[in-house]
Each structure stands twice: as structure tokens, then as C-alpha cells.
Image (cartoon, rainbow over all chains, first blue to last red):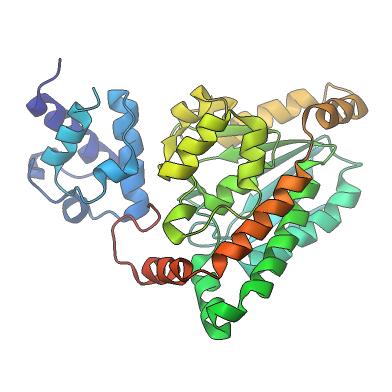
Length: 80
Length: 267
């Protein structure tokens, strides 16, 4: 069973790779829309990558309004 | 016309396969111009169907196959006319796009939607007219219409009901959630998955395989397997037009057009 911290770490690594952002500049409480500079369609791409990586389904409405990596990790954790 | 280069789409007949490329910025929103050019394609299809064995519909836009109907165009036109007067124009648009969809649906060619990225609303409905949906692993499918106070209007519900179990249709329609390609394949919507950026290549492999079959036999098999749900399609237009006159639609469209939400495409 993954811990929340492990999930956050994997999300940050995945986001940095996909959006070409230095991993060291990302923190769990960052607003990922601002930090990654992404729009709504790119956010959907991130959602798909997270679903594929963690083998979960995340209905859009569960992550709507979520803007920081930590809360995102908690949403994923509740689906693992 | 074997090749056509338009504003929103283009096509080319090559090695017995028609490739219909969607390329309207930003995400192939389907508005009046796309409809006109789809009608050009339907006219050309009358000739092309005798020369080809397959049709691939795909997108050249980065964000995906299609984000659906052009809601900004719809809102602007309805606002100009007044929402209470806009129903006849909406019905005319729907009737025209249903003609296009029905022709592609019933085409004697084997048709493949090669999908990547967003495949939402009207875009999803366009993919559903095809015999096979191939999807890039990053593709997502969604019917977000309920957030606008509407149902899908381009034939999506009857075609999805024809192809999948009713429970899947209810899940997609009533929650408005988007599902990824892996889930879409698990429920039977997507027939083949492709690696990122490879879906057109994979569709071309299959189109090439189809050349080995007798065209007339493939057409007969398709006609037997894939009846067009005409009565439900007409009913869908009526329901859509009835809903369009309700205040929820104007409010929903205005909210969408004015939204600065990070995920305006989603309910």
C-alpha cells in the first residue's frame, strides 16, 4: 500500500516529466495550474496520465476544484 | 473529388483509403463551417465510396479529436436571435448534421475513427458514427451536455445505445464524467489501443488489411450488423430542441462562454 507521501512523490515526478518542469522546483502544496502553466485541456492530459500511472479511475468532478498536488494525491489514494 | 483542402477539414483518397483530417483551431469545435465542409465530404463520398474500401477520420490538432460542438458560436447565434426564437435554426443545424452522420454511418466503406486527446460531446458523436474506434492511450471520451441543460444532439445516445450496454450509456450521460481510453476499451467502445502519437499509424495498418476483403461482402456484413436507429435519432432531435428553449440552456451556455474555470469543458 502506497503512502500519501509516496503518491505525492510519484505525481511530482510524473508532472515534471510530462510538462518539462524541474522536479526540484515542485512542492506538494503548489498550485499545479500556476506552477505547471497548464490550461484545461492540458489538465485533462495530466488526469489521464495519473489514471494510467496509478491504474485508477478519477471522475473529473472529484478533482475539479483541486489545485494542489497534495489534495490530488489524497483523491488518488481514495481510489487505490 | 479525390482530395480537398478546406478551412476545417481536408480529405485525400490514397491506396483505396480515404483519410478525412479535422483541423480547425483550437480543438475541432464543430460549428457552421465544419458542418458545411462535412456536407461537401458527404457529396464527394457518393463517388469516393466506389473507389475506396476504408475511411479513416482523424484530427491534426494537438488537443485531440474534437472538443465537440462550437458552443461559443451556438451561444452567439442564439443570443442574436433571442433564445426563444433560436429553436428553428438549432433544429436545422441538427437535421443537417444528422444527414451527414447517417451517410457516414451507413457508408459501404469500413470506417475508423482514429482518436487522440479529447473526444467530447459532438466530437464523440462523430466518432460513434464510425464502425471502429481506435484510441491513443491519452484519449478521453465524454458527454458533458447535461451541464448545459441539454442532451447530446448529434445522434450520440442512440448510437451509443446501439453499440454498448445501457448501463454504460447512463454512466457517461448522467454523470458527465470523462473516461480514458483504457476504460473505453474495457467497456467495448474502443476496439484498439495505440501508443501515444501512433493511432493514425495503427488505423492505417488496419485499413491496409481491409483491402484483402471483398468490398461488397464487407458492405453486406456491415449493413446486417449496424442498423441505423432512425426513430430514436429523430426523437433525440425533438428532445434536444425542446430542452433548448428552457432557461437552463441559456444559463449553461453563458456560464461556459464566460467561464474562466480551469476545466470549462467538464460538468
